[in-house]
Image (cartoon, rainbow over all chains, first blue to last red; front, side, top):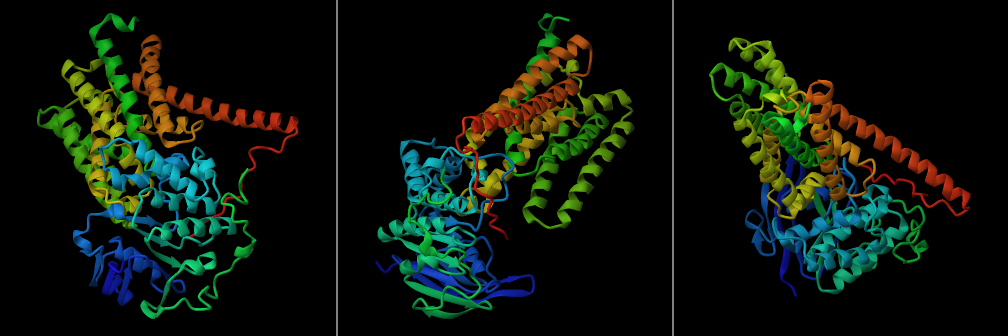
Length: 252
Length: 292
């Protein structure tokens, strides 16, 4: 199980004249849980957006599952969790509807939503502890629960690699625990995770490797540092307060 | 006046019903994406197409469709770039469209009445040819909006996610743009270019006063659009008003009724809940802003 899942080679990204990433190289192999840490503006979000093709590279190359990014088509193997729910929210949508979008990469444009899709959505909602909120409008959920909805959406596609952008930023302790639990189940299946974070919190025991970005270059790639939680990240309640029950503090 | 007494009134009614069903089915995506006014902009641009048609003695519906499609695609490309200047570019396109239309219609020697009929609709002059175009095209667009709902929902809800899911985001966006242009032009005869956007947006806004999900909002908006269109055509015949404006006023009436009704319902159910001395069931967690 050492096949490379992500290979970034000397990748640079610039917005206008400003170089945000400078010749960054990173390899993630199957079964790894890699955390990209760094302060705001260190280029960590840009790195994962670039390796997903959301931001163009100015130099270097990216390979996903041993395929150059440009020719990569197996998007169903990747579950992407953006920082927050998309801007489009003029119309209410239920939690289940948002999570069901995670099946699209697998079933394509025209195949109808079948029993396997329904089962996957239900399993993903259970994994993040939101099964009882499936029919509620997403907008009525707390920030942490909305983040868990996005994680469920990624899990519903049954991917081989999860890519998460700040999954724990601004998320309550109960949701952080629920998230760590869901990730634990995912990793137990031998799958890989790449996540960007300010601090690791309850994810620390799961993380196999840490990459620290500073000013657009990698300054550390190896063991998870002791102080990896980052000085600028605050845990208002501390992760130990969580009960571990997925629907802890906001459930009715 | 009996609606079903004449061929032309039956055609008018059926055309209005098709628009009443199709416009909200498209509109739900536009509202989702917070682009409620896009139909209005495309309507402005379509007027230039009408002018071109009248000036060169071509079918104004056909030329309006072509020009509106080009305009809608241009708007989509500007949106995709997401530049701040896009706002100004859109304004130029909108006002250029309506000014160009007024000048071209004038040059063609058509009366100002004909201009008014395109701006505010002229249902009773729907020709049998127009009728066939409206029904066939309207139902085709409706089928596309319903069948592609999961994918269109995904791109309107979270475009970046849809991109990483491997959806053909650009093709779907262009499909929405062209559908907007087609809907505007087939609705031109019924409610008019200045009011068509209302048929895309108002039933959706009304439906979401009482719905909780996207699919239910879409379904209810289509029902409301259908009812407003049917009742509007009938009422316009009874009191001799412009059908397009009557339909739109009815839809706005539905919005107000549903908004008021759901507000009252919330107050009443809260009272009942507190009287039965249970903890209020609608205690919601404070909205935690995810920021950035």
